[in-house]
Image 1 (cartoon, rainbow, N blue to C red):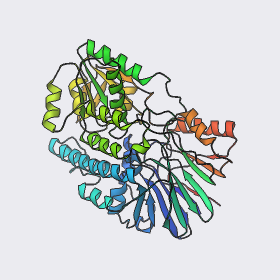
Image 2 (cartoon, one colour):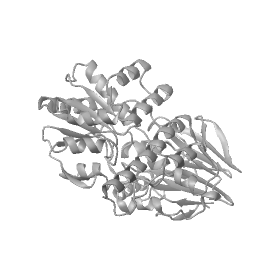
Image 3 (cartoon, rainbow, N blue to C red):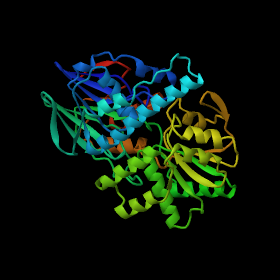
Image 4 (spheres, rainbow, N blue to C red):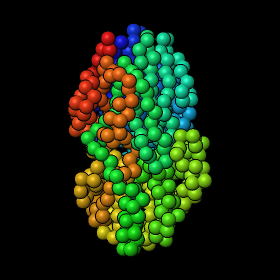
Length: 452
């Protein structure tokens, strides 16, 4: 029995792990690499195994760094089922289709305007590939134990990160392998806390915030301060927004500020068709939320929904004070890029980064103080104020990860740290070794590790 690590080593993206037990192969997560170009180029490389040899794929959740490689896997020969929770299946329908559409649009724009080095520029995959991949999804509920290959069973536990997010427990030949996926917060604004697992012979734990603690400042206070200052200047507050999870949390915070009389009288726009669709999924999974249906309805009724490209263009021409939430959260693509071009040069405006910014993304560049962004083949000056909101993260911080790990009744025989930048992953390694006394392994990209 062995594990192959095909992603999420020394980076927070590209989660892909393959369990090999005799002649059986199961892939856990099937994510895209994002961020630095050197990482993104890995998406084009063939896997070191034949996709047709996989018995099944199991997803922890729907975010593209965990699910976005599925269209390629299917195109390259995978024929099995993709097991996931019902919420993950619904969100994958939205995310994979949008990822394919954006890839096709970006390739078309690059060819039309000639700003790609490749002649012609090609999409990583297209809408037809995404549609084929979605037909492989097999939704399953939380808590049930079910077979995915001969002698291999899976159960999903609530991870609390986004709707449908699961901690995956594999039962293989009498052993328990635990994959944390992305762990949510103990006291998230809208999501329930992650479940305690209790025991496992092998553990893969994420380390996105392995070297950090989230701010204890109330996110309502932070957002209120930034909105008031920007509105007083007659500026636009631009929030690059993750469509799944973060958009809904931000709308809920803005709704709470409105109820408290702390939201200036400025319009709020949600310029993300994907976020609008994802919000409908939240309605269908109230049992995973800590807020009631009435509050959810009120938050979702707050914004003006931007439904067309023409409306989005007109929004760029509107110089009145306002709030715009637009995808994507790391400013890697989508409508936020056009808004950054329009509003980034004006010092009256503000760009609020509301989540983790992977290295190599425009969001990370902004967080690092960049005053020029390359967008659509040209350099865009950034004179707008740039702020970060860390208290609204959907990822557990270092203390919360350790608290979750302390829920294990005994130390796993093997603990692998994954899904983190090198500094975060190594900081978590040191804390686990020093505070828990567990043996820890830092896996290498494409490394193969025996579990005997």
